[in-house]
Image 1 (tube, rainbow, N blue to C red):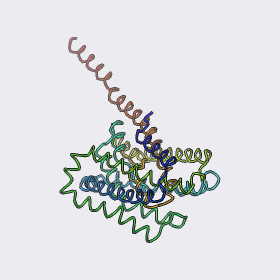
Image 2: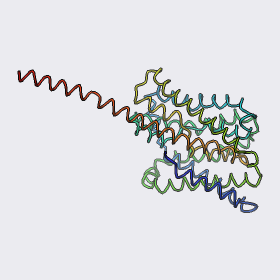
Image 3: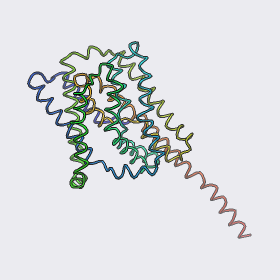
Length: 337
């Protein structure tokens, strides 16, 4: 089973925040650095994301419309349905985090990797993940503001202004400068990936430091955490089944169904964590916990499914070979006779 090493780093960061949370002036410095890190993250997202590639994929509009519907319609509906589990299974803060999880855009890298492993339509997965990320820059904050605004999420005109300044403006700046810095970003993508991940670790440390200082961890018991894991497992199972059999009902080919399944059932940790820090402020620690758990869960389950799809594809390729060999031997026998 794949255990994402980055999840271990995130958990280590959470442990560091629990033992040595930033307080006083150190908290102010960490908060300022976290704000700058989020702006840098979305600037780099804009510089890396090829709008042309994402828009070129619209020629396969049915597939991309299906992925977007799964990501920003079906997922949120499942999140809203989970409201009935409060307070029996989930606490209200955990539910807010779960609902936010359902609003996050799809991931790009793992969707491509699993689609390739399963011998699916890789170009479609690239375009679907990129287009989902592009739409999510605007759709996720708007959906969060509308669905969480009246439930204690702390959304206000000031929050929306922060979203624009910390997320949208840096992203658009990256897109505008991509023409000049795109080559540099591509050549140094490994170094910039380290910058991305380090920035997210800083965001997590700051968010969990605030949570520890405010004592929010008293709100999470092992039973509540177990209930959250079960609820997320059910949501993931529903989405995996719906994307696979829904793709069949919509008459997509096997390769397209694989791309739909992996792009339509995932949520991006890299995009969700910094968004949560802006949207939830002091409550970000509990808000990102469901996303961190779901991220690892989707990696494990999708790796198993991708390997199974690859074996199925290999079986389909090798199955005709005996028949072909039989026809050859028969033909040879006829000619010799």
